[in-house]
Image (cartoon, rainbow, N blue to C red; front, side):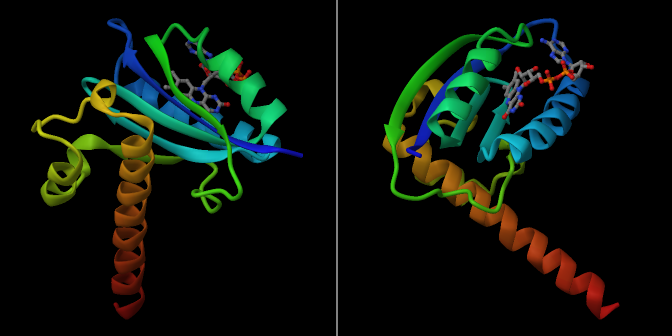
Length: 150
Ligand code: FAD
């Protein structure tokens, strides 16, 4: 079956508090594993940037659910493409908060201090999410190594 990558940006709804993000991630990881969907989600006060990758019918079904979710709004599709391979094969959904991203990395992809997903084109969005997910994986690996040394 065809594997696709879907990229979108959205704004957090006014009445959605920070506790909603934890719930979204728990449900996403549980569902995505079942659907064979992988990807990454970056959150900043200016909004969400998410990539969903997986079998076309699963990604389509999931996106149809996500756009109806009242916890965010102005959902804007940035890209939908068939892909030869996944970029996030080890992540049922990587989650990155923009305020945890290294400054140098943020500057590489943005002219602003605060990351704004609506300023990104699809190529930039993909490069950005791959870079921040790799940064997160390196951080987690170092943390794990330090714990093992203790
Ligand atoms: P349910 O079992 O119906 O809900 C689980 C719990 O989530 C509920 O108890 C409730 O507390 C909460 N919840 C669910 N929907 C809402 C809602 N609309 N408003 C308030 N609380 C709610 N889902 C995925 O499966 N994969 C993703 O990658 C994914 N990414 C998302 C990214 C963003 C930015 C947002 C806003 C949502 C995302 N979601 C994702 C959630 C998605 O919109 C649906 O809520 C979810 O898929 C419903 O799954 P379910 O039927 O298993 O959950």
